[in-house]
Length: 127
Image (tube, rainbow, N blue to C red):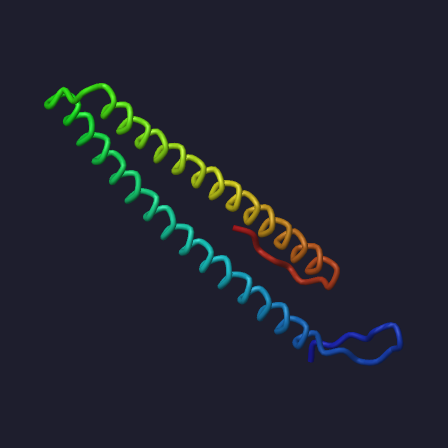
């Protein structure tokens, strides 16, 4: 039986500790996989938005070249495009900041798990 004793010489079953750590690491891994999946979904949505923007811009530029609309209409359309591009850039910047924060948090948790594992004598493998 894998046992040791604590400072009061009471026996401790290390299998229970290992099981607790395994459960915690499985939960952390599951959370990480869900985060990665939601990130991929967000990137897919951003790609779709980017394609829509490119299609919109292509259509707008075709209209400009084909119809030679008066200057006021072109300025309004151009401002619309610039506003949309600025909005998308802002959303991308916010998203990247969120991703950086999440990565830092995951890295911090991973370091903590390895530190705890070292303290209790459990060998963890890193990818």
